[in-house]
Image 1 (cartoon, rainbow, N blue to C red):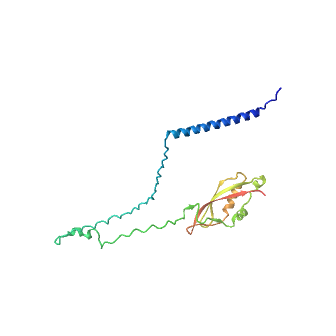
Image 2: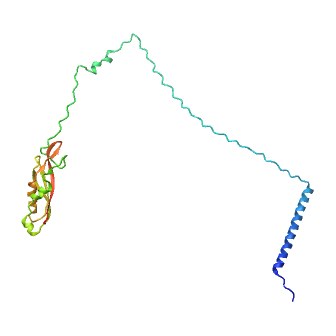
Length: 218
């Protein structure tokens, strides 16, 4: 049995043979083409392409000059003959303006209405203030015995008017606390209070006010 051939060695030998054959064929083809051109006697002319230069000019912006309009033409004077007569009726100024007549003065403005005697205000420049504050109110408040024994508490809202002398007028219950005599006790306490009068335009006026009165057992 003979020695075995290596496949790698056979492939390398075939590759070299193929490469050499290709180079020989390519060389023969090149020589043939060169010989054919020489026999043909043709000439190869290479023309030079003319270079075109483009010049870019700067565009100058045109300045627009505004021309002022011509001045208006002066009016053409109208010539009046020297012997022309001007009608006196056209210059009768007395018919339009009587210098001897007197001018009627405008009537004086009506006097301001400062009669606040019967008016009742809700908001004024200086609102009334309770003399002694809330402490004076609760000092005058008397808790009803029946409500105290029954353990009744509540809140009463009284509406009233403070007159020009700071006295309380026409106290009314607008929110009741219910039974127990709390409403009557609140009205009695408010009626004893004095206030600084409300002022409007420097004058004392009548002002409507509301005051809550709270009953709470200690």
